[in-house]
Image (cartoon, rainbow, N blue to C red; front, top):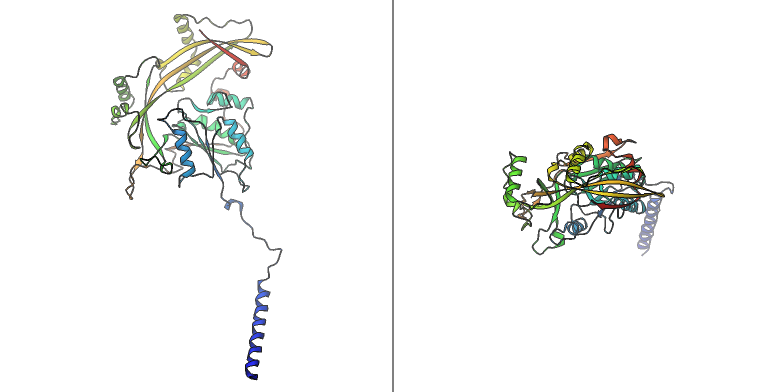
Length: 408
């Protein structure tokens, strides 16, 4: 019995000493801290859906909304609907910084648009569509305020999702300036057409995929009907070495599956304006001969049309008398509105899939400059008026005036 008691005492002593030793080694100095590098904290991502679908067969915004909410590859932390202008996007970013204290890593902006002129996205609510000219005007009028460096910085990518908007480098460069004045920003857009489509027949939102596509263009006068034979002749002239079966796409407006060649049509607008001081008379353009004389004498109007790369013969041109209320006096002007019809043929890019899933979208490398245009703003000045386009001082001066257009 005594031996058993002695053994128990020895075991308790050993346990006490070993526990005491472990407690000593486990003590941590309260002054020690764990340092986490800021660059290792994941950056938040956000998507802006900048419009609503008004046609049941073209659900561009609806499908994009599904995609950026549910896609395993491209889902973003937030998806924002209900905004309509660039100024609202800038304000939203400034007022909703990421919760982790890091600037945004990716900002998607989804908007209808075209490579010829502009985006459906407005510069300000109820204002003009976003183009090089309207964006330039907003810049010089200080109508847009860039988010500060806690929200957008040189490591933020503004990814503009439109239809071949990457072909318009100047527009992207101006947008980079708007988003990153003072601290840098990068704007990215595809040179190819972009759209979204269901992969499942039951239209499961989780099946929506993002496609890039090749495009071909033919033009027509808006006052005339689209003639298939004339479109084919024009396509053969414009793309003489291409063997694509365009007639199939011209006859197909809606796809039965995401791999099919199809087409849609739209119009490209151009607006030119001259203003005149009080007492000066705008030129008379009531007759056809007077209008032709005006057109032949205004090379800057022809240059504006040329920026679209659409021949002038495809434009319908109308003249309007304008009245501006500038302060307490009236300013008169002449506005020339031109629009051309465009038929766009679209061939989605797909790739084979080892799992047997059909119509898998082609996914280009993110830094492939043959697919994407990437523009950055780093300097205080990127363009001057002469480099951008011929913005007339009088037109700039009256930009915010009340306007009334009277067709002639």
